[in-house]
Amino acid sequence: MIFTTKAEYGVRLLVELGRQANDAPVALKTIAENEGLPLAYLERIVALLKRADLVESTRGAHGGYRLAREPEKVTMDEVVLALEGSVAPMSCFVDESDDTRVLCSHVDDGEACATKLLWLRVQGGVIEALRRTTLAELVAFSAKQDVAQSDQTLGSALPLQSTA
Image 1 (cartoon, helix red, strand yellow):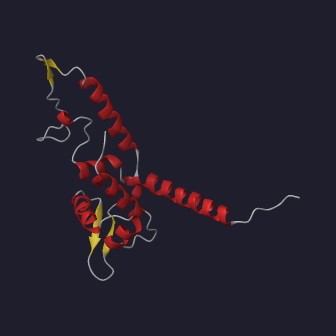
Image 2: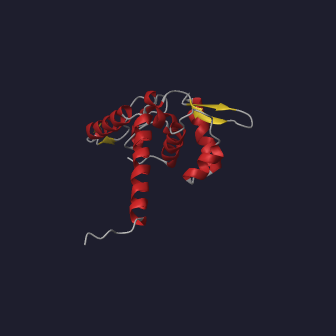
Image 3: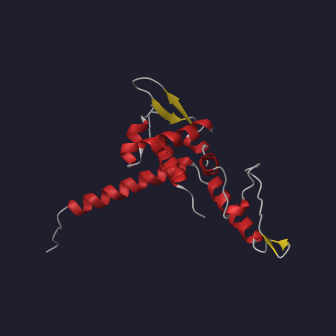
């Protein structure tokens, strides 16, 4: 299953907002620069996140975006659904009239799709993994990665000490 850049960039945007300790609004331009993402694309993505009540905006000189809820209360299944519209392992699985319903349109010799059970299980596993993952976990993970990266940089800058 491959998610689009909408999901990737949207999650990265939310992690950046989740990293703000003071809950102050962050300009989208700042996030675009920090993450190396295209600003115009982020504007479209943040509109989807706002529509899903995941972020809120503040206008003005010190305006920007912030999380609408605590990171612990934001799960990745709702984020991906807001950005992608559905989670489907196969294109034939999407029922355009109901994003939550699985519709397998493939028919083998008049019989139901032989692989539907497999793809239902794949879809269920992915959705469950997304449901169990909170934004708070991703924020904490990214902070650990920053510490590990700075430790590596610091370690490579230190002179080797001789034990002799």
